[in-house]
Length: 461
Image 1 (tube, one colour):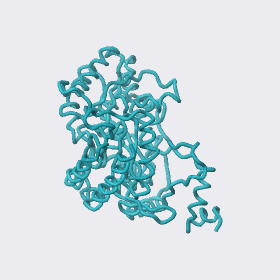
Image 2 (cartoon, helix red, strand yellow):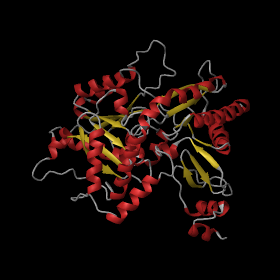
Image 3 (cartoon, one colour):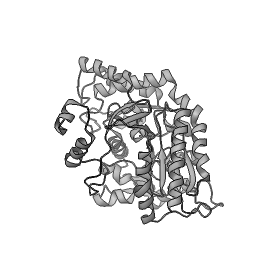
């Protein structure tokens, strides 16, 4: 069978042929393209539950839910059925000046689940677009309220908020920012809540007070919004201190600054609640969401705001002059509705909360391995920080991290049948975010693979 036939007919797949075609024509995201052209490209061809299969038929435990998004697991027939039915009824219509039933139904459903008074849903195609929309709304809201100088956005160091130019400006990962500078002006960054190496005497709310100090430094009259994830992804699943978000809420209120909760990952059950802000007991002004909204069966995101933020646009000629062609796509909306139905029916949020302790215990048990330092996270969203010396918490330098993560761990974990993330945006970590249907069997499998591979990595150093 030729490579072309393998692609056109959908199988049986020739892994070698598909790998060659991928290297020739498919520009993969965040992927080094200067590597050995003969090295095989991992090609995933099917999935079921917590597992996916490659072109050679090998099974892998999807310990990252693809990219923190296949929350309900792979191969759910409810999604294909919802999509097929919607395609027959209405394949597409825009939400620019028009509406259609599925977008209306989904917006209403989301409004009922969102915390507090957040009841207006602006649909996007994904997370970066949702963050971009929130930044634009914050600026436009202040301008229409007679405070046009309030344009700056405060985010946290190492935090990832997306790749579009506004979202990238908020992103606090230097290596992602510098290739595309100059970025949108007005983005400022403060310390995050990673307290693994904090001095023992530091105030637990020190990181929150850094936001207050930065607003004062920038001048409150120039700051539009603070954007924070409930649990920060980049840097390795960094949770907040007790009271952190309550203090941030006070700071924002005192300075007429909007609080954006970036929940592209932390919503739809990932940390045990429909929205991460609910878990930590704070009320944002705007929520951004995506990924698990459809369990990734269709691309979709949203920005959720309140009547208060919409009110300045309610004039005879008022409009939030912003939008995306596919925002609120009827097929994506139908799948999202099916996903919410499924999550309610199977109580996936309750399952995550019930099993969170067992999942964490599986990872904590690895602390006897010399390079395992910190274990942190929430729900089904955890990271293991790797260290050179556990007693001193000394981290690896750049060359050591490159050798450890990309030279050994990434390939070894994959060869042992576990898909997870070895990352060093910040200190080196292994991130795990299995589908929300994962249970004891999958936790045991994750623990066994990690023990084998991390023990081997320790012996190499």
